[in-house]
Amino acid sequence: MTLLMIAVILVAGPFAFFLEQVISSGPLSRADKSLANSMHVQACTNAAAVTAARVISFLGSTIWDTALIVVAVAFLLFRRKEQRLAIFAGVTAATGSLLNSGVKLLVDRDRPLLSGCQFGSATGQSFPSGHAMNTTIVYGVLVLVFLSLIKREWRPVLIGVYAGWLLAMSWARMTLGVHYLSDVLGGIVLGCAWLAIGVAVFQAWRKEAGKPPADVIHEGVEPEAELRADQNS
Image: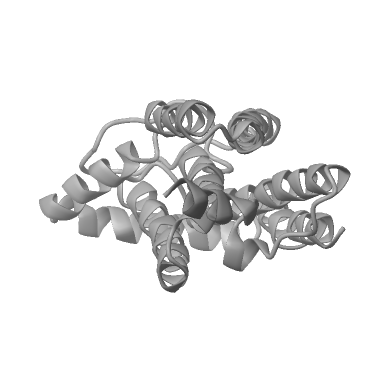
């Protein structure tokens, strides 16, 4: 219930605010355009930043995210015999991608139109950012699935890297001129909400199996995986 409430608060609070600003062309939407133009002008004279942004963007692309989830699911199914975790990872990532596509179609926001140099084009609508949202969900799922399999002292580091990666992806999409600030923020918020819903469903599944609630932030969604890993080693 706590996770579901977090998801509701994220959607009803910050995401609803970003959506309202986009639809009504509010102050944030106007600031979006100013920031996008400023970042675009700087990127036009910084080839290294553009190259880095392209590499980061590829690591948040649909083909890369799909490959990550497929490899993770295969590993969980055939190497660790973790069917429940495999289902959680695959279903949460796939449904999150579908949700992003649906919201994009409903909002129907155009991509930024920036004058000057061009770094390529992006298809589809702009809000919310698919790269930001799918990165939030896919990499978040991987962190929560494998968190219990790494040493405890390294777990805060992994979560910190995850948060930094979300910032890097947001910067990359804005540097390439294919998204506004509200696009990437909206994608991250909606991604976090969907991730919370996925974890809530998985925790309910654990309860039905007679398992206690997991301390998700510190132990991942399946703390027992740590014990099984120790036994296997």
